Image 1 (cartoon, one colour):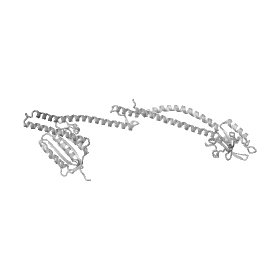
Image 2 (cartoon, one colour; image 1 turned 135 degrees about the vertical axis):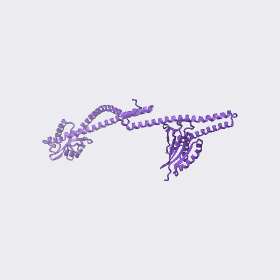
Image 3 (cartoon, one colour; image 1 turned 45 degrees about the vertical axis):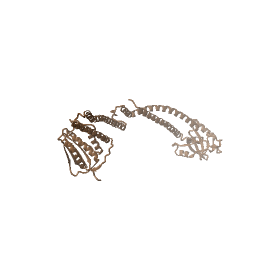
Image 4 (cartoon, one colour; image 1 turned 180 degrees about the horizontal axis):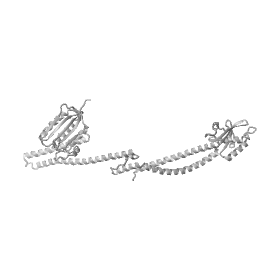
Length: 497
């Protein structure tokens, strides 16, 4: 399956985004793990050595005093204590504090320096540690490095009238520096190796996941590609069951709409060609007649009798009238189709309009020996429409009825009041229209086969349909072969609100 450039770019972007998330998550995990491991180590060390200070007091201060007879610190004793402690754990630093927290002595400090005697450890953490029996995770001051908080063990003492605390830092400065260096190196190695392996595995898994998750998107892209290449009938199968059901369904609906529009355009193109062909034919016929008779008059003018010359002129006049009527219909239909005519609706009496049309067509009907009748009740209400357009529609229907009604036939115009509208019906006794052809008669230049040739451009009924559309109405046809045809439409009753 071929993928479009858009699909490839989307997959690349998703993959890069996924990898970026993994990298950020990996870095965040490393720092979180480092922080938690430090806390875990310190808490473990503190709990493991929680009683160290008390054990030291019990063991060392039982037989010997931390102060000599003059009240000075017993440095020899503390030297032995520090030696023993560091032999077991080099990370330990032991401090002797007075009851206010000032450092009285420590092997790791230079007591010749004046600032050493000013070093003080905050008693708050120490008292909290003693109160909790070393169960909690508590950080205290580091006299050697005041900027660092360390885990510790502490216990109070009262010896020879002097009170204070034995304060043991469980992680000395040297130990912390050594551990930090080793931990950084360890985590760097672990992070690099673990991150690389994790990224490779996660990248493969992520790409496979993205490939699977974008499967339906690729189907849509492929369908669009097929559609672009001319396969207008290709659709996404089971659109409602895909992960992108909304997009897939919308695409199918869009494709159906475009296909319908394409078919409509093709139909309009065929109608356009048919229109041009029919216009050419209808214009050529009267023009040929006019040209032929004029040439005959020019060539045989002295040889023709007065009667023949008059007949030629009558024929030319009829052809001119037919040509003029065709051009007028074309002009009228083009304006209607281009929506250049805006109906000027007003209330009027449809009965008066029907009487006027009846009087005008009665002479034409008599010439063809057709019985023209007008049927309507008294008191028919006003209708609300464009009177000139309605008159044109009725005239076209009358022309059509008289054209297809044989001699001694009948044409009836009915005005029928309804509840909210008035129905106008024009019924003839002509040859009728087959049901299959009834939908075609309102299309421009569509004439049905009735077994007899009739003059006409085929635009009369198309114009009627356009006029009805402007009035939000419809033209209906009821016909059967050899039983005549009935056309009807309705106009709204005018109501004063």
